[in-house]
Length: 306
Image (cartoon, rainbow, N blue to C red; front, side):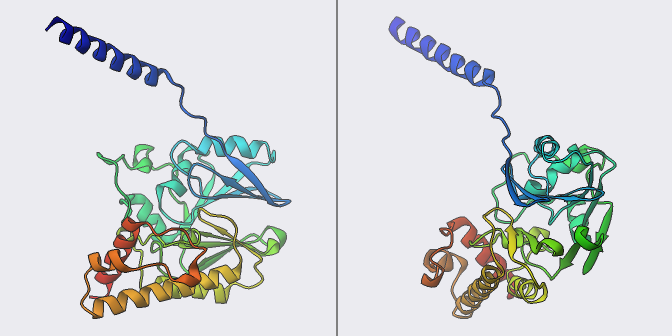
């Protein structure tokens, strides 16, 4: 009996020691990697979605600000790129890994989104298809008394500045959410697509924030066919792509929608689709299919096709 008690005490002490050691470990540093795309355009990676930094004559424009706690690392990194003040943030959509850093920027910074994204950011509803933390974190903007929320919005198109400093904002319809903004730097022939084109993979269809698997093929095709003279597309989370990649991605999403439509018409269930659908061979370079996302996307589309 005594041996058992000694063993229990040793295990308890060992567990406590591990817990204390873990508690004493400093948090992992927030590393922001910089990739120079043009003399005045930089891509900041790490901590969430891809952040673009556009240095204009009158100041710096930031596209997307990553996860909570990553605003200051972005600010610190920008100081090493330019001494100009940050004047504007553009958020491509509502998700926390693209907007949460807003609250760490100066209150004087102008923040612009699509009108639907502003409404979504005020609610910060959980994203469809992503496992949620329990209990859910508080709305970061409410927790900061509204700091970081958009000050201006647009509906279909907005142009900011002129000449080499011009930025064009477009909305081509629902997809990843119902407020996906396309950010174009015409003088640089670069476009930031956000997560409606996060990379070559199954998209995240966030129905809770207005996303649509039925509309996304058309929205992607409109972007590919409307915006001209683009050499580089910044994706939401992957490497840079081309307009041909974007056109292919529109085709991929249309084929996925067709497969879901045919499956539903044939009387198949979402579970049937999740266990049987495979990435077409011609899209062999696409990311491996995540079963949870496949099932979630199938459910979103089946619900839309009712």
